[in-house]
Length: 182
Image (cartoon, rainbow, N blue to C red; front, top):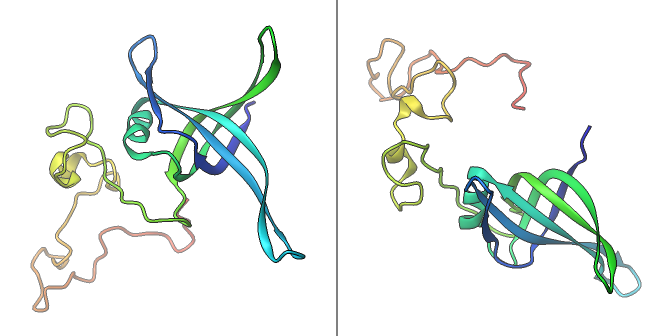
């Protein structure tokens, strides 16, 4: 049994790069999640209480978070929640720590651009300015349908483009009518 949580809030400071004892990367940042409500008497939105969460992001997700997230950006974080009690000579308290399993920008407040990282051992660097398609060959692409090979969308079922240069009647991937994308 574990406590899964999804948070929408603002990154308090630029993520810090840390490492595990084994040298694997960790991105660490604080997330401020504020409650907002509409005050009908004043006719305006009012900020309520703010909760702060310490977020840790491990592995490749952590590397991507370090490059993608910046102070003040609105993000969505899904992960496991752990409440931890702490005590010093002067104070006692509880901190809310989240180990992130997924992180992304909240597109309600802005636009984001996605760039795939290169796989380990692939030629090229994960953070170059070249398109990701040049970094990983199509037959090793994790985004492809398993067992499917990329095809020229202009090719017909027999592999020869038709006069209009359009794809033939045979679809590249068949999907059942009742299938859901999730």
